[in-house]
Length: 467
Ligand SMILES: Cc1cc2nc3c(=O)[nH]c(=O)nc-3n(C[C@H](O)[C@H](O)[C@H](O)COP(=O)(O)OP(=O)(O)OC[C@H]3O[C@@H](n4cnc5c(N)ncnc54)[C@H](O)[C@@H]3O)c2cc1C
Image 1 (cartoon, rainbow, N blue to C red):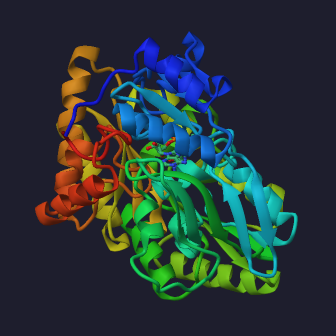
Image 2: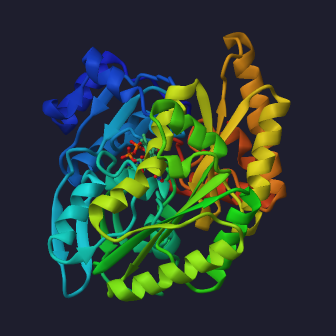
Image 3: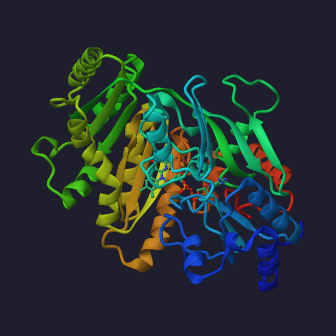
């Protein structure tokens, strides 16, 4: 393979005349912005930030990059947490933020055709205004873009009932590494015609193609919601409750866990309501349905089950303001962790039955390395965000202990039948752990797929695989 080439000033000038002067930015502020995402303090500046506004401009840019062997790193809003949008090989940062049209919303087909630069929350509000619903709900939904969600297969609390982003994608418009525009899948809810390229591109983290638009499935907006908060004195009981609630068919839309360490981090920011102090774990459940009374009945069944397992008194909220209040602790954990200490977040997943074992493993690994672990996450999906905190550890010890602890943590999680990322992707920061979770023949097949889509290795180089 011919090595990647630097984007020299002469090539920048040629790029400007090829794709349009207003598409290419090389000023310091633009390069600095394009060199970062939300992953730690990493910065890798590109030589140009390109902001195409049409699929034709994306195609022409990719043809240029392929001809001159220039690295291209697609980016959405740069909210990624695994360094996927960092242009680690320089070259071009390709922002999709100007492709921001909702092309159509069809209530009859329960379908939206959207461009990659639409903010997730904007689509949700647009469809909800028509009584429709697009469920994927990453916490970053008011800033992140649908193209980024598709590239990461992003998820959120509601993926327990509704599935992750990939469950809502029927087809894609994408630009290949050589500039060819393809359309995969389409507008139909069923499609058995050939290999499922749509689902291959979803979660491919910008390494196989640039997604420019998507056909997304919609559903009817639930008429009623209810939120239920359950405090537990024992972690095992909370984990057991998760498994039993799911097995009993209570069908929660969300089932979130906040364990003691995470509660303490929130309490350090603001006093917790007295009813939430001194618990080993909280479970927060959201129910969706059509009839408020039916939701109350389900909530009573869940509370009874949880009580049998030792939970404290349940809090129930049916109106929006009370629901926001119950969600508040869970929503503040991320910010509270950032505030507490320098940290490293691992996006672990285990089968739900292994949740308590995963929290214990995280605490044990952290303690063994002189760190503290704070855990919270999407318990129903077994997706536990483990934050390793530096605390008072001197900076010179932090990096080596952090890396050793992270590796030991992932090994323990994989031994529990889990994997190394549930929704944040492998990107740049997790790539050395991929072989823990994927067997060598599968890894080899993944590399062959990468070579088939991108023979010159220009699309998001350095990501997912170690060189
Ligand atoms: C406060 C906060 C909360 C978060 N909460 C959640 C959460 O609840 N659930 C969750 O899953 N994630 C969460 N995230 C992570 C992040 O928001 C998601 O990964 C999101 O999908 C990234 O979207 P983005 O537009 O910012 O993409 P970027 O960060 O810009 O890019 C992410 C990856 O996608 C690729 N990419 C972007 N656009 C395209 C495209 N059009 N075509 C091809 N590749 C592309 C990039 O190359 C990169 O590899 C959170 C992040 C923050 C900062």
